[in-house]
Length: 293
Ligand code: NAP
Image 1 (cartoon, helix red, strand yellow):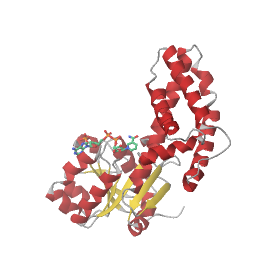
Image 2: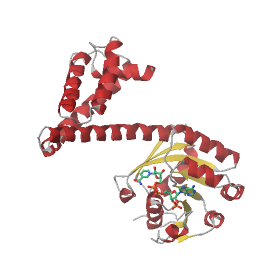
Image 3: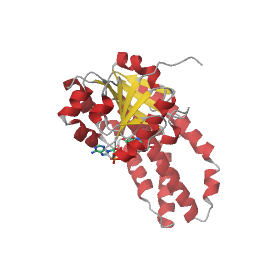
Image 4: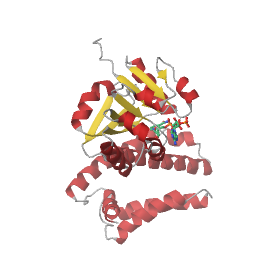
C-alpha cells in the first residue's frame, strides 16, 4: 500500500461523531489531537489520539482543525473567545458540524475575519460507518484548499465530494438529501402503520421495498429532466389521477383511526398544484408550485 503523508490534525468535539472522525484519522496514520468541553470524553476517544484539556494547546502546531459540535450555536459560543480565534489563525478549519447554508456563510465570515482557512463540510453517515464505503462527505469552499487536504480527508470517507466554491453548497446538498431521507422515512413508517391498523402484517409492505424505491428512482429521474426543461407534460399519469390516489390514503388513515396528518399534508400540496391549473400534467409539476411560493 502506498504510504500516506501524516498530517497534524486537531479534532474539536468528542461527541459520537467527533470521536469516530478522530479515530478514523488516527487509524489512517495521522497525528491527532482531540479536545472536548467535557474533558473525560476527549480522554475516552483513544485509538492513538492525544487528548488535551486546553484548546489552544490542542490546536497548536496543527495544520488541519476539524470541528464536530452539536450545532453552530455551540461553535459560535466556543469561537467567540479571542484566545481561541487567535489559536486558530493561519490554520485550515474543516467545519463538520451540521447546519444550514446561512450557518456556513456566517462561519466563513468569522473565519475570514480571523485569518482562518475554511471549508464547510457535511457528513452523510452514522459514526459506525465513518471511514467505510458507506460514508459520504460533501465539501464547499475554496477548491485549492480542498485539493490541498483531500488526501488527508479521505481517511473519514473515501467518497469525498467537492460540491462548489459557494460556501453554503455542501449544507444545501446535505439538507436536500436529508429532507428526502426524513420525508421518505416518515412515509415508510406511516405506510407500515396503515398496514398494521388494517390488520396486514407490515412485513408484506417491507417485502415490496424494491417496488416503491424503484418508483421513487424513476420519478426522480423524470423530475430532473422536467425541471431542467420546465416542461411537465406527459402521457403516463395526470396529477388529477395521483390526487385521487392520495385521497384513498387519507381515507384509509381516518377510517383506521391512525394519524392522517402526513397524507393530509401531501394531499394539500398536490391539490395546490391542481388549483394552479396543473391537473393534466405529470406528478413532478408540483415542483412549480413549491419553488414559486
Ligand atoms: P453529540 O454526541 O451530542 O456531541 C455533541 C458535541 O458537541 C459534544 O462534544 C459536546 O461537548 C459538544 N458541545 C455541545 N455544545 C457545546 C458548547 N456550547 N461548547 C463546546 N462544545 C459543545 O453529537 P454528534 O452525534 O457527535 O453530532 C455532532 C455533529 O455531527 C452534529 O452537528 C450532527 O448533526 C453531525 N452529524 C452527526 C451524525 C450522527 O449520526 N451522530 C451524522 C451526521 C452528522 P460535551 O461532551 O462537553 O457536551
